[in-house]
Length: 417
Image 1: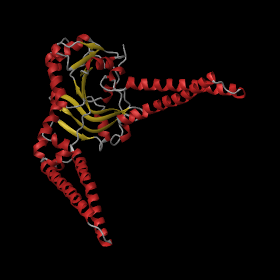
Image 2: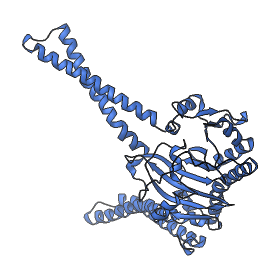
Image 3: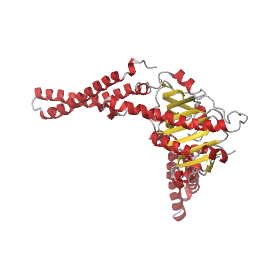
Image 4: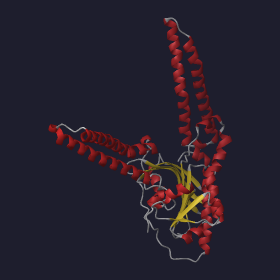
């Protein structure tokens, strides 16, 4: 854990001012030295002076953004701890520096990362890279929030953002998934081939905001009352993520904010800490408090409902191995597309070229005729070229279709009962 002195707001403000002044000096050096270096010259000694000014300008141009990036890295490890310093029920863990502690939290009762594998919120993953974790017990609700990247067996990133798990007082039957509405065509593609069915919302006013899926119509309608949907809408608006989704699965509320990152934007370096750190702390607390309110509502319903025999979770939440460090550059979605789709495109291109040449040669053989001494040899080459082209194009199209079927389609990971 970071020491109390390291998260003191006055200390962070001094570091911000130091970094801001250093970056401004570097940028000013570049802006001043570059035109001077371009203007000075004409003799051997003056060319030497001009070169010195130009070198100073280049160093300043490189140093200015580097200083800002270094400040961002400094704040990345301390900003979260400073933001939750006033909450005794929230604890920040720097996962990059404490791998053993991260593994323990992500396999605990509060946050079982394996529960997300069969939740319909993310694609089927094998490993994960975690940067920061917020955990604790807010108003009696154990929880965990993690800034995380989920990777497949090849190391390609399937999900990047924040995942959260909030423990319910008792397990609930069925699986209920709430996602952002993506239009008629998008919703149809999302659930094609999935083992869950669409649930009609109780309030038509939310039909244009959320889409609900599940394997238990009764349980889904019991959970998603108008009050619950209002809180989910508030959580969606608070997240400011590229995508929001949540699932009520067994004894957990699982939330996913795709694209969310707990990092300090570079432009914050121009603002004093007291202008934005408190606002950031309130936003971060909302990511905990809103789901806790949802869990409290479900716990009250469960307390008033007839007690049923508890059943174990439907799925085994096996531990997920964590990778050290930050996600590699070549694990991003773009490189996943290149890595998995690139070879398929090579197959298609190769088959098209060789098959096209074979077809052109075959057309020539039919219309003009091949020489008698090479007749069978050339027709053999044409046949092999056509067969190879057909096979390569078919193989490439099949692999591209498989990639498109899996791409960002977590609902398809749920098998039909």
